[in-house]
View 1 (cartoon, helix red, strand yellow):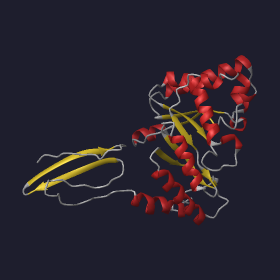
View 2: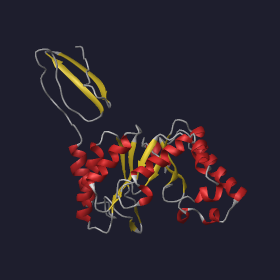
View 3: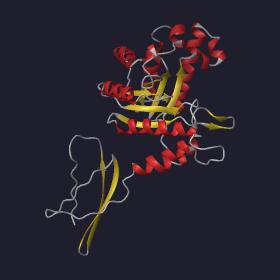
View 4: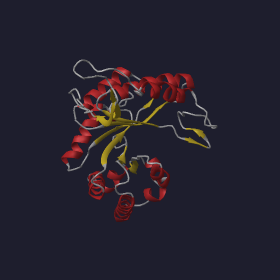
Length: 290
């Protein structure tokens, strides 16, 4: 799979090194204790990080720590500090994330309120953890958009990049309703200035779809796929913009963050250049000389 990513220049994030939920911890690991478990843990993280060093931009080091604590129960309260410290030392260029569900999805889960998320993250940073990213899974049924926006606003005060890492809409809803709610969630995430990226949780396998898929088994778009391909992607692409400069030789436009190519023509002279729009509170000025 990674050879495919490399060949197609697809950027990947690492999810995950450990999972605190015993349900998703291998049975042979659950049966270990003490030094044997510590040796298995060390082997896992060291082999993984050495094999994929500088290959992933992110690592979800220890998944869903607010809901589960298998490794801390069996190895002590410093187990998580060890995981993050080893990951950072092994691949200092990767951004390390705290990944969790039911932070933006609902206010009824007492384990993963925005305050408990912030408290746990700050606790780890006080312990010396290099924690540089906020991972919000985003497994929605009926989205509460005001709640989602308020949670993002509060987490944004930490000054860390926020990613929606596993967005889907519950299969308890019909496919058309899934598409409507997916549209709402993606717009809310895309429009927030502290959200740096969004990943969809749309795994398709021979047994069918986990919760939400963009296509059917024949790779034909479902309503959710149409929302992404035929609505949002087209709306969020600038395309080609043409216009004339004013008397001072200036031309202004609004654009999304990203890379741009500009061509200026005056009489028989033409000049082409590129520039990028990055996050800033200031107007971006680009000068092109003919």
